[in-house]
Amino acid sequence: MPLISPWRADFPAIDALQRQGQTYLDSAATAQKPQALIDATVHYYANGAANVHRAQHLPGAMATQAFEDTRRKAGEWLNAGASGQIVFTHGATSAFNLLAYGLEHVFQAGDEIVISALEHHANLLPWQQLALRRDLKLVVLPVTEAGVIDVEAAAELITPGTRLLAVSQLSNVLGTWQPVRQLVALAQAQGALTVIDGAQGVVHGRHDVQDIGCDFYVFSSHKLYGPDGVGVLFGRHQALAQLQHWQFGGEMVLQTGYQTATFRPAPLGFEAGTPPISAVIGLGATLDYLNALNQSAVAEYEARLHERLRAGLMLRDGVRVLGDPHVALVSFIVEGVHNADLAHLLTEQGVAVRAGHHCAIPLISGLGLSGAIRVSLGLYNDSDDLERFFIALDQALELLR
Amino acid sequence: MSLPSDAHAALETFNGSLSWEQRARLLMQWGDRLPPMSDEEKTDEHRVDGCESKVWLMGDVIDGHWQFRAASDARLIRGLVALLLARVNGLSLQELQQVDLVEWFTQLGLTRQLSPSRSNGLNAVLQKMRQLAG
Image (cartoon, rainbow over all chains, first blue to last red; front, side, top):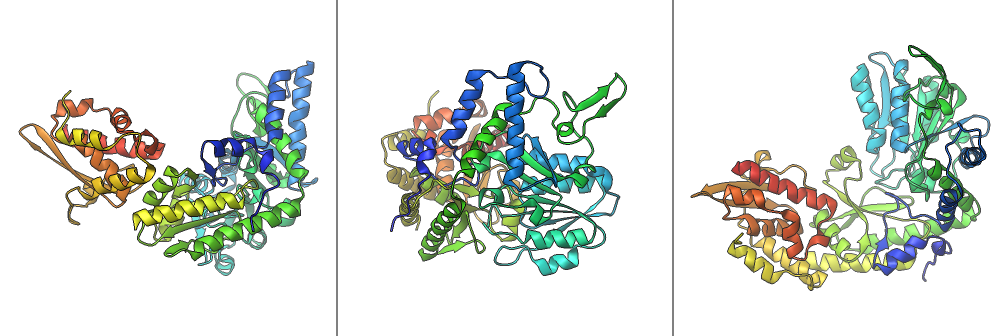
Protein backbone atom coordinates (compact mmCIF):
# COMPACT_ATOMS: atom_id res chain seq x y z
CA MET A 1 0.00 0.00 0.00
CA PRO A 2 1.48 3.35 -0.97
CA LEU A 3 2.33 5.88 1.73
CA ILE A 4 1.34 9.32 0.49
CA SER A 5 2.52 12.42 2.30
CA PRO A 6 -0.31 14.96 2.70
CA TRP A 7 2.37 17.64 3.29
CA ARG A 8 4.42 17.04 0.15
CA ALA A 9 2.65 19.77 -1.84
CA ASP A 10 3.58 22.34 0.83
CA PHE A 11 7.23 22.01 -0.23
CA PRO A 12 7.58 23.30 -3.79
CA ALA A 13 11.22 22.21 -4.14
CA ILE A 14 10.31 18.54 -3.84
CA ASP A 15 8.29 18.84 -7.03
CA ALA A 16 11.02 20.89 -8.72
CA LEU A 17 13.64 18.32 -7.80
CA GLN A 18 11.45 15.54 -9.11
CA ARG A 19 11.15 17.34 -12.45
CA GLN A 20 14.97 17.34 -12.53
CA GLY A 21 14.90 13.61 -11.94
CA GLN A 22 16.08 13.91 -8.35
CA THR A 23 14.74 11.99 -5.39
CA TYR A 24 15.70 13.87 -2.25
CA LEU A 25 16.59 11.57 0.65
CA ASP A 26 19.12 13.74 2.48
CA SER A 27 16.94 15.75 4.83
CA ALA A 28 19.17 15.01 7.83
CA ALA A 29 21.79 17.17 6.07
CA THR A 30 19.33 19.93 5.26
CA ALA A 31 15.59 19.93 4.72
CA GLN A 32 13.52 21.42 1.90
CA LYS A 33 11.46 24.46 2.78
CA PRO A 34 7.70 25.01 3.04
CA GLN A 35 5.96 27.62 0.87
CA ALA A 36 5.09 29.51 4.07
CA LEU A 37 8.78 30.23 4.66
CA ILE A 38 9.35 31.31 1.07
CA ASP A 39 6.33 33.66 1.25
CA ALA A 40 7.50 35.18 4.53
CA THR A 41 11.01 35.79 3.19
CA VAL A 42 9.70 37.40 0.01
CA HIS A 43 7.28 39.47 2.04
CA TYR A 44 10.03 40.77 4.30
CA TYR A 45 12.31 41.77 1.46
CA ALA A 46 9.51 43.12 -0.72
CA ASN A 47 7.93 45.21 2.01
CA GLY A 48 10.91 46.80 3.69
CA ALA A 49 14.01 45.34 5.22
CA ALA A 50 15.28 47.02 8.37
CA ASN A 51 17.73 46.34 11.14
CA VAL A 52 16.43 45.06 14.45
CA HIS A 53 16.66 46.48 18.00
CA ARG A 54 18.31 49.69 16.80
CA ALA A 55 16.12 51.98 14.80
CA GLN A 56 13.31 54.17 16.10
CA HIS A 57 11.58 54.16 12.67
CA LEU A 58 8.56 52.11 11.68
CA PRO A 59 10.29 49.59 9.37
CA GLY A 60 12.76 48.89 12.19
CA ALA A 61 9.93 48.42 14.67
CA MET A 62 8.16 45.98 12.35
CA ALA A 63 11.28 43.93 11.67
CA THR A 64 12.05 43.83 15.41
CA GLN A 65 8.50 42.71 16.14
CA ALA A 66 8.70 39.86 13.61
CA PHE A 67 12.18 38.90 14.83
CA GLU A 68 11.10 38.80 18.47
CA ASP A 69 7.94 36.89 17.54
CA THR A 70 10.21 34.10 16.28
CA ARG A 71 12.07 34.10 19.59
CA ARG A 72 8.77 33.55 21.36
CA LYS A 73 7.72 30.82 18.88
CA ALA A 74 11.06 29.02 19.25
CA GLY A 75 10.64 29.08 23.02
CA GLU A 76 7.14 27.68 22.66
CA TRP A 77 8.36 24.99 20.26
CA LEU A 78 10.67 23.75 23.03
CA ASN A 79 8.20 24.49 25.83
CA ALA A 80 10.78 26.72 27.48
CA GLY A 81 8.08 28.59 29.41
CA ALA A 82 9.61 30.97 31.94
CA SER A 83 12.55 28.63 32.58
CA GLY A 84 14.98 30.31 30.22
CA GLN A 85 15.62 32.22 27.04
CA ILE A 86 16.26 31.71 23.35
CA VAL A 87 19.50 33.07 21.85
CA PHE A 88 19.85 33.21 18.07
CA THR A 89 23.23 32.23 16.64
CA HIS A 90 24.45 31.69 13.09
CA GLY A 91 23.91 27.95 13.26
CA ALA A 92 24.11 25.02 15.66
CA THR A 93 27.88 24.95 15.23
CA SER A 94 28.23 28.54 16.33
CA ALA A 95 25.95 27.84 19.30
CA PHE A 96 28.31 25.06 20.47
CA ASN A 97 31.28 27.35 19.99
CA LEU A 98 29.52 30.09 21.95
CA LEU A 99 29.06 27.61 24.81
CA ALA A 100 32.61 26.25 24.65
CA TYR A 101 34.11 29.74 24.77
CA GLY A 102 31.52 31.39 27.00
CA LEU A 103 31.77 28.66 29.65
CA GLU A 104 35.55 28.30 29.47
CA HIS A 105 35.99 30.23 32.71
CA VAL A 106 34.06 27.67 34.78
CA PHE A 107 36.70 24.98 34.14
CA GLN A 108 39.88 24.27 36.10
CA ALA A 109 42.71 22.09 34.80
CA GLY A 110 41.81 18.44 35.34
CA ASP A 111 38.03 18.98 35.22
CA GLU A 112 36.07 16.60 33.04
CA ILE A 113 33.82 17.19 30.05
CA VAL A 114 31.65 14.22 29.15
CA ILE A 115 30.48 13.63 25.59
CA SER A 116 29.53 10.40 23.80
CA ALA A 117 31.11 8.29 21.09
CA LEU A 118 28.38 9.20 18.61
CA GLU A 119 28.63 12.97 18.62
CA HIS A 120 28.60 15.01 15.43
CA HIS A 121 31.83 16.98 14.97
CA ALA A 122 29.91 20.14 15.96
CA ASN A 123 29.37 18.71 19.45
CA LEU A 124 32.82 17.16 19.65
CA LEU A 125 35.41 19.59 18.34
CA PRO A 126 34.46 22.69 20.37
CA TRP A 127 34.76 20.59 23.58
CA GLN A 128 37.87 18.77 22.42
CA GLN A 129 39.58 22.06 21.70
CA LEU A 130 38.38 23.57 24.98
CA ALA A 131 39.85 20.54 26.77
CA LEU A 132 43.17 21.09 25.01
CA ARG A 133 43.18 24.83 25.82
CA ARG A 134 42.40 24.32 29.50
CA ASP A 135 44.06 20.97 30.13
CA LEU A 136 40.72 19.25 30.82
CA LYS A 137 39.85 15.60 30.44
CA LEU A 138 37.42 14.72 27.65
CA VAL A 139 35.48 11.61 28.69
CA VAL A 140 33.73 9.70 25.92
CA LEU A 141 30.67 7.66 26.86
CA PRO A 142 30.49 4.33 25.01
CA VAL A 143 27.63 3.40 22.73
CA THR A 144 25.90 0.00 22.75
CA GLU A 145 25.66 -2.30 19.75
CA ALA A 146 22.15 -0.93 19.14
CA GLY A 147 23.56 2.58 18.87
CA VAL A 148 22.46 4.00 22.21
CA ILE A 149 24.68 5.70 24.79
CA ASP A 150 25.36 3.16 27.51
CA VAL A 151 23.65 4.55 30.63
CA GLU A 152 25.26 2.03 32.99
CA ALA A 153 28.71 3.01 31.80
CA ALA A 154 27.67 6.67 32.01
CA ALA A 155 26.75 6.22 35.67
CA GLU A 156 30.38 5.19 36.29
CA LEU A 157 31.98 7.75 34.02
CA ILE A 158 30.02 10.80 35.18
CA THR A 159 31.80 11.68 38.43
CA PRO A 160 32.21 14.57 40.85
CA GLY A 161 34.96 15.75 38.47
CA THR A 162 32.42 16.21 35.67
CA ARG A 163 31.76 19.88 34.98
CA LEU A 164 29.75 19.52 31.80
CA LEU A 165 27.85 16.90 29.82
CA ALA A 166 27.19 17.44 26.10
CA VAL A 167 25.29 14.74 24.23
CA SER A 168 23.12 14.33 21.20
CA GLN A 169 19.40 13.65 21.48
CA LEU A 170 19.10 11.73 18.20
CA SER A 171 22.13 10.33 16.38
CA ASN A 172 22.68 11.77 12.91
CA VAL A 173 24.35 8.52 11.82
CA LEU A 174 22.42 5.81 13.67
CA GLY A 175 18.94 7.36 13.90
CA THR A 176 18.70 6.30 17.55
CA TRP A 177 17.06 8.26 20.36
CA GLN A 178 19.44 8.78 23.23
CA PRO A 179 18.57 8.52 26.94
CA VAL A 180 19.06 12.24 27.47
CA ARG A 181 16.78 12.55 30.48
CA GLN A 182 18.72 9.91 32.40
CA LEU A 183 22.08 11.32 31.33
CA VAL A 184 21.06 14.84 32.32
CA ALA A 185 19.93 13.55 35.72
CA LEU A 186 23.27 11.76 36.24
CA ALA A 187 25.20 14.90 35.35
CA GLN A 188 23.05 17.17 37.48
CA ALA A 189 23.53 14.92 40.48
CA GLN A 190 27.22 15.80 40.17
CA GLY A 191 26.52 19.49 39.75
CA ALA A 192 27.54 19.51 36.09
CA LEU A 193 26.14 21.72 33.35
CA THR A 194 24.21 19.90 30.62
CA VAL A 195 24.05 20.57 26.88
CA ILE A 196 21.78 18.71 24.47
CA ASP A 197 22.47 18.65 20.74
CA GLY A 198 18.95 18.69 19.34
CA ALA A 199 19.95 19.24 15.70
CA GLN A 200 18.33 15.97 14.59
CA GLY A 201 15.99 15.39 17.50
CA VAL A 202 14.10 18.66 17.18
CA VAL A 203 12.92 17.68 13.69
CA HIS A 204 11.07 14.60 14.88
CA GLY A 205 8.34 14.97 17.45
CA ARG A 206 7.99 17.73 20.02
CA HIS A 207 10.43 18.02 22.87
CA ASP A 208 10.18 19.76 26.18
CA VAL A 209 13.38 21.28 27.55
CA GLN A 210 11.84 21.58 31.01
CA ASP A 211 11.06 17.89 30.98
CA ILE A 212 14.55 16.98 29.72
CA GLY A 213 15.92 19.22 32.44
CA CYS A 214 18.97 20.34 30.46
CA ASP A 215 20.71 23.69 30.93
CA PHE A 216 21.20 24.23 27.20
CA TYR A 217 19.50 22.84 24.10
CA VAL A 218 20.83 23.58 20.62
CA PHE A 219 19.28 23.16 17.18
CA SER A 220 19.68 24.53 13.70
CA SER A 221 16.83 26.06 11.75
CA HIS A 222 17.74 24.59 8.37
CA LYS A 223 17.22 20.98 9.44
CA LEU A 224 13.80 21.92 10.87
CA TYR A 225 12.53 23.05 7.43
CA GLY A 226 13.67 26.60 8.19
CA PRO A 227 16.24 28.88 6.54
CA ASP A 228 19.96 28.25 6.91
CA GLY A 229 22.22 30.64 8.80
CA VAL A 230 20.26 30.48 12.07
CA GLY A 231 20.97 28.43 15.13
CA VAL A 232 18.75 28.34 18.18
CA LEU A 233 20.22 28.08 21.66
CA PHE A 234 17.89 27.60 24.59
CA GLY A 235 19.49 28.29 27.97
CA ARG A 236 18.06 28.15 31.45
CA HIS A 237 18.32 31.49 33.23
CA GLN A 238 20.84 30.26 35.83
CA ALA A 239 22.98 28.63 33.14
CA LEU A 240 22.89 31.65 30.83
CA ALA A 241 24.05 33.77 33.75
CA GLN A 242 27.28 31.72 33.80
CA LEU A 243 27.95 32.32 30.13
CA GLN A 244 30.57 34.98 29.49
CA HIS A 245 30.33 37.22 26.49
CA TRP A 246 32.16 35.81 23.52
CA GLN A 247 31.70 37.81 20.35
CA PHE A 248 31.71 41.56 20.64
CA GLY A 249 30.19 44.26 18.48
CA GLY A 250 27.02 46.08 17.67
CA GLU A 251 23.96 45.98 19.93
CA MET A 252 25.36 43.60 22.52
CA VAL A 253 26.82 46.44 24.53
CA LEU A 254 25.22 48.47 27.34
CA GLN A 255 27.85 51.17 27.74
CA THR A 256 31.25 51.60 26.25
CA GLY A 257 34.12 54.05 26.21
CA TYR A 258 37.34 53.53 24.31
CA GLN A 259 38.95 51.47 27.08
CA THR A 260 36.18 49.50 28.78
CA ALA A 261 32.61 48.36 28.24
CA THR A 262 29.65 46.69 29.91
CA PHE A 263 27.46 44.22 28.07
CA ARG A 264 23.84 43.20 27.85
CA PRO A 265 22.62 39.98 29.42
CA ALA A 266 21.08 37.18 27.32
CA PRO A 267 19.74 37.08 24.75
CA LEU A 268 20.97 40.29 23.09
CA GLY A 269 24.37 40.17 24.79
CA PHE A 270 25.12 37.01 22.81
CA GLU A 271 23.84 38.29 19.49
CA ALA A 272 26.62 40.67 18.49
CA GLY A 273 26.24 42.40 15.14
CA THR A 274 23.31 42.30 12.78
CA PRO A 275 21.64 38.92 13.13
CA PRO A 276 20.28 36.93 10.16
CA ILE A 277 17.00 38.89 10.26
CA SER A 278 15.23 37.48 7.21
CA ALA A 279 16.18 33.95 8.17
CA VAL A 280 14.91 34.36 11.73
CA ILE A 281 11.63 35.76 10.38
CA GLY A 282 11.51 32.82 7.94
CA LEU A 283 12.02 30.41 10.83
CA GLY A 284 9.03 32.00 12.54
CA ALA A 285 6.89 31.28 9.49
CA THR A 286 8.18 27.70 9.38
CA LEU A 287 7.30 27.19 13.06
CA ASP A 288 3.78 28.54 12.39
CA TYR A 289 3.47 26.10 9.52
CA LEU A 290 4.69 23.16 11.60
CA ASN A 291 2.51 24.14 14.55
CA ALA A 292 -0.56 23.99 12.35
CA LEU A 293 0.12 20.36 11.40
CA ASN A 294 -1.43 17.45 13.20
CA GLN A 295 1.61 16.38 15.23
CA SER A 296 0.50 12.85 15.89
CA ALA A 297 -0.33 12.35 12.20
CA VAL A 298 3.17 13.54 11.27
CA ALA A 299 4.81 11.27 13.84
CA GLU A 300 2.78 8.27 12.76
CA TYR A 301 3.51 8.89 9.08
CA GLU A 302 7.23 9.32 9.71
CA ALA A 303 7.31 6.10 11.71
CA ARG A 304 5.59 4.11 8.96
CA LEU A 305 7.84 5.51 6.24
CA HIS A 306 10.92 4.82 8.34
CA GLU A 307 9.80 1.26 9.00
CA ARG A 308 9.33 0.70 5.28
CA LEU A 309 12.81 2.02 4.56
CA ARG A 310 14.35 -0.12 7.24
CA ALA A 311 12.47 -3.25 6.27
CA GLY A 312 13.30 -2.79 2.58
CA LEU A 313 17.00 -2.51 3.35
CA MET A 314 16.95 -5.54 5.65
CA LEU A 315 15.43 -7.61 2.83
CA ARG A 316 18.44 -7.08 0.61
CA ASP A 317 21.34 -9.44 0.53
CA GLY A 318 24.54 -8.23 2.11
CA VAL A 319 23.05 -5.00 3.46
CA ARG A 320 24.16 -4.24 7.00
CA VAL A 321 22.22 -1.53 8.82
CA LEU A 322 24.23 0.47 11.35
CA GLY A 323 22.78 0.23 14.85
CA ASP A 324 19.07 -0.21 15.44
CA PRO A 325 17.58 3.01 14.00
CA HIS A 326 14.37 4.33 15.58
CA VAL A 327 13.37 7.19 13.33
CA ALA A 328 14.30 9.61 10.56
CA LEU A 329 17.17 7.83 8.88
CA VAL A 330 18.97 4.58 8.23
CA SER A 331 22.69 4.24 7.56
CA PHE A 332 23.99 1.10 5.94
CA ILE A 333 26.84 -0.58 4.15
CA VAL A 334 26.80 -3.49 1.71
CA GLU A 335 29.26 -6.34 2.26
CA GLY A 336 31.91 -6.42 -0.45
CA VAL A 337 30.82 -3.14 -2.00
CA HIS A 338 32.65 0.13 -1.45
CA ASN A 339 30.27 2.82 -0.24
CA ALA A 340 31.87 5.35 -2.61
CA ASP A 341 30.97 3.11 -5.58
CA LEU A 342 27.43 2.67 -4.36
CA ALA A 343 27.07 6.42 -3.74
CA HIS A 344 28.39 7.14 -7.22
CA LEU A 345 25.81 4.89 -8.88
CA LEU A 346 22.93 6.17 -6.74
CA THR A 347 23.90 9.70 -7.73
CA GLU A 348 23.98 8.63 -11.38
CA GLN A 349 20.37 7.51 -10.99
CA GLY A 350 19.21 10.73 -9.40
CA VAL A 351 18.95 9.51 -5.84
CA ALA A 352 20.26 12.11 -3.41
CA VAL A 353 21.57 10.31 -0.34
CA ARG A 354 24.60 11.05 1.77
CA ALA A 355 27.74 8.94 1.66
CA GLY A 356 30.86 9.12 3.78
CA HIS A 357 31.54 9.73 7.43
CA HIS A 358 28.57 12.07 8.18
CA CYS A 359 30.72 14.46 10.24
CA ALA A 360 31.26 11.72 12.79
CA ILE A 361 34.66 10.28 11.86
CA PRO A 362 35.45 8.79 15.30
CA LEU A 363 32.11 6.93 15.36
CA ILE A 364 32.47 5.58 11.81
CA SER A 365 36.09 4.52 12.44
CA GLY A 366 35.05 2.98 15.76
CA LEU A 367 32.59 0.77 13.85
CA GLY A 368 35.51 -0.37 11.72
CA LEU A 369 34.16 1.40 8.64
CA SER A 370 35.50 4.02 6.26
CA GLY A 371 32.02 5.34 5.54
CA ALA A 372 28.39 4.45 5.07
CA ILE A 373 25.38 5.47 3.01
CA ARG A 374 22.71 7.39 4.88
CA VAL A 375 19.12 7.63 3.67
CA SER A 376 17.20 10.26 5.61
CA LEU A 377 13.55 11.25 5.49
CA GLY A 378 11.53 14.42 5.74
CA LEU A 379 7.80 14.69 6.22
CA TYR A 380 7.43 15.30 2.47
CA ASN A 381 8.98 11.98 1.41
CA ASP A 382 6.67 9.18 0.34
CA SER A 383 6.80 5.51 -0.52
CA ASP A 384 7.41 6.34 -4.22
CA ASP A 385 10.66 8.03 -3.16
CA LEU A 386 11.63 4.86 -1.32
CA GLU A 387 10.63 2.75 -4.31
CA ARG A 388 12.89 4.80 -6.59
CA PHE A 389 15.70 4.45 -4.09
CA PHE A 390 15.29 0.67 -3.86
CA ILE A 391 15.21 0.26 -7.63
CA ALA A 392 18.34 2.38 -7.96
CA LEU A 393 20.02 0.42 -5.16
CA ASP A 394 19.22 -2.92 -6.79
CA GLN A 395 20.50 -1.76 -10.17
CA ALA A 396 23.67 -0.35 -8.64
CA LEU A 397 24.35 -3.58 -6.76
CA GLU A 398 23.71 -5.65 -9.84
CA LEU A 399 26.34 -3.65 -11.72
CA LEU A 400 28.84 -3.73 -8.89
CA ARG A 401 28.58 -7.42 -8.03
CA MET B 1 49.17 20.07 -27.08
CA SER B 2 49.41 16.55 -28.47
CA LEU B 3 47.58 13.97 -26.40
CA PRO B 4 48.93 10.59 -25.33
CA SER B 5 47.40 7.70 -27.30
CA ASP B 6 45.51 6.39 -24.27
CA ALA B 7 43.89 9.80 -24.04
CA HIS B 8 42.64 9.48 -27.62
CA ALA B 9 41.25 6.07 -26.78
CA ALA B 10 39.48 7.55 -23.75
CA LEU B 11 37.96 10.32 -25.87
CA GLU B 12 36.69 7.78 -28.38
CA THR B 13 35.12 5.71 -25.63
CA PHE B 14 33.56 8.31 -23.36
CA ASN B 15 31.08 10.94 -24.36
CA GLY B 16 27.98 12.58 -23.01
CA SER B 17 25.57 10.28 -24.87
CA LEU B 18 26.31 7.18 -22.82
CA SER B 19 23.66 5.84 -20.50
CA TRP B 20 24.59 5.78 -16.83
CA GLU B 21 24.97 2.00 -16.95
CA GLN B 22 27.26 2.09 -19.98
CA ARG B 23 29.29 4.81 -18.34
CA ALA B 24 29.58 2.85 -15.09
CA ARG B 25 30.59 -0.35 -16.90
CA LEU B 26 33.21 1.47 -18.95
CA LEU B 27 34.61 3.20 -15.88
CA MET B 28 34.92 -0.12 -14.10
CA GLN B 29 36.60 -1.68 -17.17
CA TRP B 30 39.10 1.13 -17.35
CA GLY B 31 39.77 0.78 -13.66
CA ASP B 32 40.21 -2.97 -13.92
CA ARG B 33 42.78 -2.53 -16.69
CA LEU B 34 45.12 -0.56 -14.43
CA PRO B 35 48.26 -2.57 -13.73
CA PRO B 36 47.88 -3.89 -10.19
CA MET B 37 49.80 -2.44 -7.30
CA SER B 38 51.16 -4.86 -4.73
CA ASP B 39 50.14 -4.60 -1.09
CA GLU B 40 53.74 -3.65 -0.23
CA GLU B 41 53.41 -0.65 -2.52
CA LYS B 42 50.18 0.52 -0.90
CA THR B 43 51.96 2.42 1.83
CA ASP B 44 51.03 5.62 3.60
CA GLU B 45 53.82 7.32 1.69
CA HIS B 46 52.04 6.52 -1.57
CA ARG B 47 48.57 7.44 -0.24
CA VAL B 48 46.92 10.50 -1.72
CA ASP B 49 45.39 12.61 1.05
CA GLY B 50 42.04 14.22 0.46
CA CYS B 51 40.21 11.44 -1.37
CA GLU B 52 36.90 10.01 -0.13
CA SER B 53 38.24 6.53 -0.85
CA LYS B 54 41.80 5.25 -0.59
CA VAL B 55 44.02 6.12 -3.56
CA TRP B 56 47.71 5.26 -3.93
CA LEU B 57 50.02 6.76 -6.51
CA MET B 58 53.58 6.08 -7.69
CA GLY B 59 55.53 7.59 -10.54
CA ASP B 60 58.70 6.97 -12.57
CA VAL B 61 60.41 9.12 -15.12
CA ILE B 62 61.91 7.61 -18.27
CA ASP B 63 63.79 9.96 -20.61
CA GLY B 64 61.95 12.95 -19.20
CA HIS B 65 58.52 11.35 -19.61
CA TRP B 66 56.43 10.50 -16.57
CA GLN B 67 54.69 7.16 -16.04
CA PHE B 68 52.33 6.91 -13.11
CA ARG B 69 50.70 3.90 -11.52
CA ALA B 70 47.71 4.16 -9.23
CA ALA B 71 45.29 2.03 -7.26
CA SER B 72 42.08 2.60 -5.34
CA ASP B 73 39.85 0.45 -3.17
CA ALA B 74 36.75 1.88 -4.89
CA ARG B 75 36.09 0.67 -8.42
CA LEU B 76 34.56 3.75 -9.99
CA ILE B 77 37.18 5.99 -8.43
CA ARG B 78 39.77 3.61 -9.90
CA GLY B 79 38.14 4.17 -13.29
CA LEU B 80 38.25 7.94 -12.93
CA VAL B 81 41.89 7.75 -11.84
CA ALA B 82 42.62 5.51 -14.86
CA LEU B 83 41.18 8.19 -17.11
CA LEU B 84 43.41 10.76 -15.46
CA LEU B 85 46.44 8.49 -15.97
CA ALA B 86 45.47 8.13 -19.63
CA ARG B 87 45.69 11.90 -19.93
CA VAL B 88 49.01 12.37 -18.14
CA ASN B 89 51.15 9.28 -18.72
CA GLY B 90 54.02 10.02 -21.06
CA LEU B 91 53.98 13.76 -20.45
CA SER B 92 56.99 15.88 -19.50
CA LEU B 93 56.94 17.84 -16.27
CA GLN B 94 56.14 20.99 -18.19
CA GLU B 95 53.18 19.37 -19.96
CA LEU B 96 52.01 17.92 -16.69
CA GLN B 97 51.84 21.41 -15.19
CA GLN B 98 49.44 22.45 -17.93
CA VAL B 99 46.91 19.65 -17.55
CA ASP B 100 43.45 21.04 -16.77
CA LEU B 101 41.51 18.43 -14.83
CA VAL B 102 38.04 19.91 -15.29
CA GLU B 103 38.59 20.45 -19.00
CA TRP B 104 39.69 16.84 -19.43
CA PHE B 105 36.67 15.37 -17.64
CA THR B 106 34.40 17.79 -19.50
CA GLN B 107 35.78 16.47 -22.80
CA LEU B 108 34.92 12.98 -21.60
CA GLY B 109 31.38 14.03 -20.71
CA LEU B 110 32.00 13.21 -17.06
CA THR B 111 31.53 16.59 -15.38
CA ARG B 112 28.37 15.43 -13.65
CA GLN B 113 30.30 12.52 -12.18
CA LEU B 114 32.67 14.99 -10.56
CA SER B 115 30.95 15.85 -7.30
CA PRO B 116 32.74 18.54 -5.28
CA SER B 117 34.40 15.94 -3.04
CA ARG B 118 35.40 13.75 -5.97
CA SER B 119 36.77 16.66 -7.93
CA ASN B 120 38.87 17.63 -4.90
CA GLY B 121 40.09 14.06 -4.67
CA LEU B 122 41.16 13.90 -8.32
CA ASN B 123 42.77 17.29 -7.95
CA ALA B 124 44.71 15.90 -5.01
CA VAL B 125 45.89 13.04 -7.27
CA LEU B 126 47.03 15.53 -9.92
CA GLN B 127 48.78 17.66 -7.30
CA LYS B 128 50.61 14.60 -5.99
CA MET B 129 51.70 13.77 -9.56
CA ARG B 130 53.11 17.25 -9.96
CA GLN B 131 54.78 16.98 -6.56
CA LEU B 132 56.40 13.66 -7.52
CA ALA B 133 57.50 15.07 -10.88
CA GLY B 134 58.66 18.39 -9.50
